[in-house]
Image (cartoon, rainbow, N blue to C red; front, side):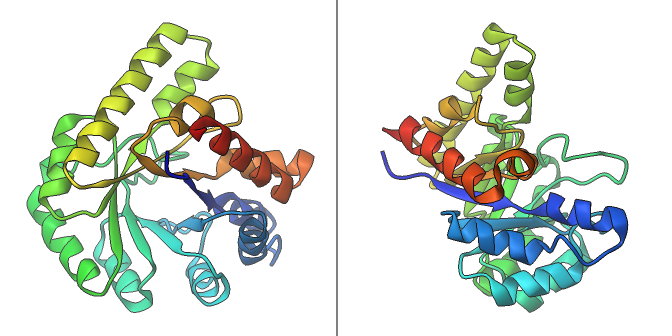
Length: 246
């Protein structure tokens, strides 16, 4: 199978920085360490409330890293203006609620198809690869293809939770649904990514899905860095992903 790319999400380096209101740890430094350790891209989510990544971080990442930036954001006018000005390699549209701790599910593309089609058109025109962060529902996949998205990113959070809770039958059913979704998306000409909640323990079965081209992993790697260092954590994730493809 084709080698699977690893995108490293550095949001929670900024979370730690913001807890003290200081200038460190620096998300750009983390991104450069991730790049040196073998990350194929960097992901950063600029939330409307700026709870972790801030505008200046996105500017610094665009100027400082040598791998593609995957700019996660809600589909708002403010975020479109930022993306059109900076023109990151990829723009991944995600659902966003102020009260959530982390992204709770996938974007409802089917319910907002007309608006999203018009929203992504100028992003595509300036060269951004537009991705929809969605669940494995067939309606959302087909709607993403219809509006002209280049990529879908499948939300693996529910599978990760079932795996962690020791519910193997339900986890296997969820994994099967993700596999079917990847096959369908690929057949429609969409590039397929996945992410959310992935760890050393649960990444193997996801990474083995043949249609996948990229995994985006953040919270676990930043947490694991406290114990083994960011570089070694990324290298170990890379090793497990490669072994799954083999």
